[in-house]
Image (cartoon, rainbow, N blue to C red; front, top):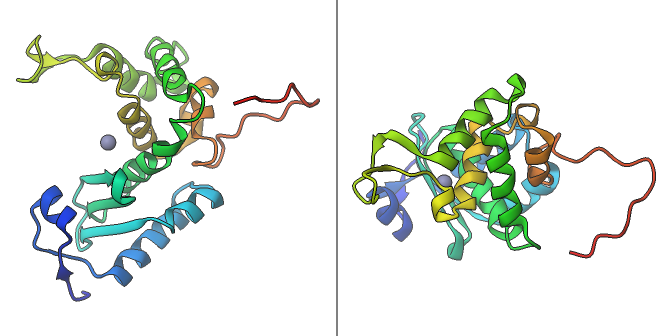
Length: 203
Ligand SMILES: [Zn+2]
């Protein structure tokens, strides 16, 4: 195993760790992740500009953070699902500011919550929880005493990242009206090309 280094301030705050993986080991792990997961080349080029940190890559510990102001993606351990989730946060951090993307995504997730197509069943269930909450999941900070989901807080960023890791970037598991928000992040999310050029986009 590589020699651990002193943990960053964010690693201490996020995970309470005093040591973390050295930068070369982290870069190497993320590069292999980029290879085995369905990220676009453009997304990978963007990820390479970010600070990347990992606590302990000797095990598949879950958990991670996106520190937006630090442009830092941080994972606790060697778990693809957590890394996909935090990298999706990093991607959406800027994408959500474009036009009415954030609002449109939430609208799409509301539609997904009632999606009848069985091909999208797993995503539909996630969306249903995001929109309606989980009455059996206690949440002391909630006025109802249970987790009320993400729509009530207009938390488009957790919806985006949750669906990304929920389907492990496999765009066949999302209907086209949700898939389109992942264009540029995951392979297979680009909308089908119209046979003729459409009106010019203004946003
Ligand atoms: Zn998240």
